[in-house]
Image (tube, rainbow, N blue to C red; front, side, top):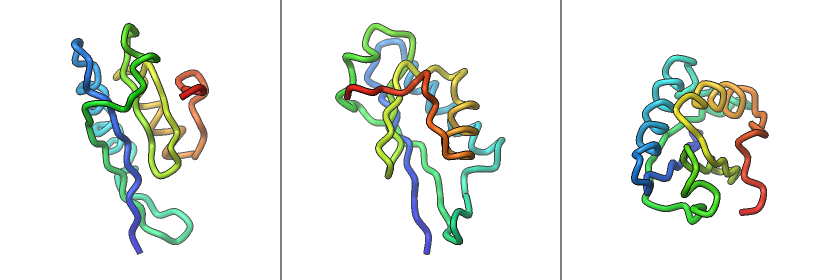
Length: 107
């Protein structure tokens, strides 16, 4: 059975950083070979999707990065910049570890 893990990236910012973050995440998934995973005997696909709003603006509106949520676990990250993509892919998707410095705790 195949499952899908999704990374929703907010693109509702004037700076366009959300689009850049989404592109960087897609690139890193390919580079790190994590676009399709085999975990616990199940095949898992990872999709990066942009969206207009995640209702997390209070965390990112005036900051340098975008908000994103990883599903199905529902982990929310904020102020994510394209330079953070490699770490997010390697640690969160590859190792199953939360990237504490980007984690949004009070959603």
